Length: 179
Image 1 (cartoon, helix red, strand yellow):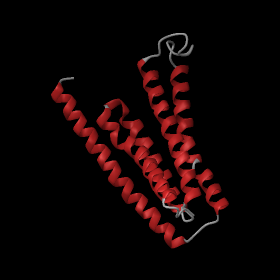
Image 2: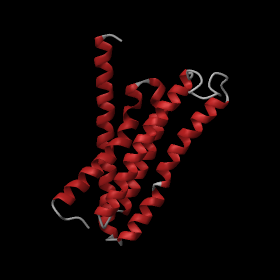
Image 3: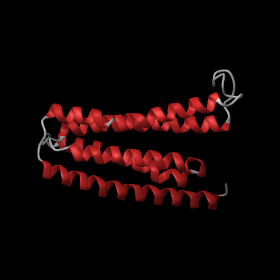
């Protein structure tokens, strides 16, 4: 890749990430607005709701694991596992998607639980966060083979909402106005 091609790819990644950030801000704002209309929810109900909602996050992790297993099952090179032989390109790609999904899922679930513990009005915000995660993972998975720019929007839709949630919680906790 030439310097010019690299810089062009960087710009495309930045545009995708920027678009994901704007999308996340808009969707989360709708969630927060809906939460204000619904009113406060008791702590145990918020946490229980969040755990149930995060089943949809964990499903993406299960899909990634199943995809790697499926690819290994149908590949003579990969069926023995990665400790025995070098994985095929397809399995390496699937493992990279799985690894990123694991990282993003752990960040998201932690962020979602902290949101539930911090804000007394968080049900629709959690729904927004989980939906952004699901759409983001789908787009990341679809775009993965086409390069960094093609997966940037999907990556951003899974990363930025979690980051924004954590920053909002940290700021709320720091000023002492948590639920």
